[in-house]
Image (cartoon, rainbow, N blue to C red; front, side, top):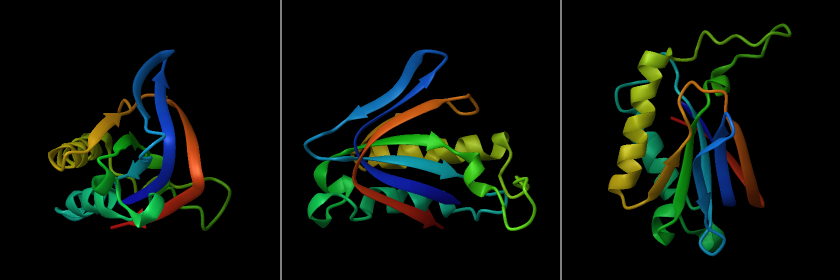
Length: 144
């Protein structure tokens, strides 16, 4: 599993001109989490990813989104699993199929909410327009 975590003051996801998820947190900061699920992820990889999203100290003052009671916009991003080492066309063979990946994203969202974090989500499998106002800029590539 891979994720790109970006510190944001706001972020949103639109599908077919419909706003499906947004966070606005200029005072505390928030996290835009683009998450790709791998075909061979272990049983508890989702727990590790949820913990990292919640606890990594990427907000101002070396605080985590959990520390500040911040918000997360969680977006499925299978293209993070693309292999580009050879040729000009990415290989998607490492990406989990939708029926495997969607429940994993739901588990991550549920775990973050259980930790008291406000979570908004994109729409799994949809063509999404993602907008964000990055702060820092501060972006991490996280792997489990």
